[in-house]
Amino acid sequence: MELILIRHSLPVRRVVEVGIADPELSETGIQQAERIAEYLANEKIEFMYTSPLKRSLQTAEPLAEKLGLKPVVVDDIAEYDRDSSEYIPIEELRATKHPRWQKMLDGEWDAPHETIDQFKSRVVGAIESIIENHRSSTVAVVCHGAVINHYLASILGIATVRGFFYPNYGSIHRVFASRKGPRSLMTLNESADRI
Image (cartoon, rainbow, N blue to C red):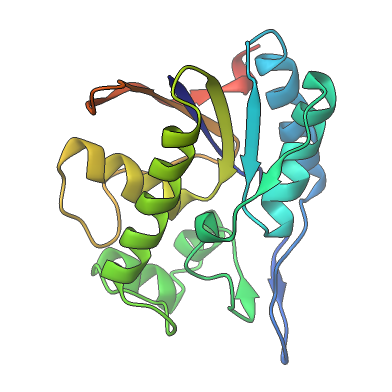
């Protein structure tokens, strides 16, 4: 089967004093989501899944509409920062030398509600369950940077805390999953912006 992992498009920056940030897409992010839909419209995608976070749901909408599919929400493919009171795009963290950027560079895990091992187990288990349920299909999964990073690291046998690469906003990553078990990375950081 072919698994198409899609990182959500660019969200707005959101910092709240109380509650969970869970930002929606920025104007740029909305345009990226539309380009993803155009780019993948002719693929034979039979099923779609998405994280419950707004940035993933909104990224999935245009593609689901083009394909006539209703995405299934899977809680276990939500990002590790799902309960955070802030979302600052990584480019801003890097440009402003935000303390969270340095923590990421140092390989520190920044999720108060689950350990790195719990996160990896959750996301790998969820994605493998999707694969198991669709052994002969092409499936799109709209999720998050760390989810993609840790799933791909697991199939490549790379031990990592912060990930081994940077999945761009709106990027597409393809995996071939054999019925007999092997997983093969087909593309990494494919971009709909090239259409």
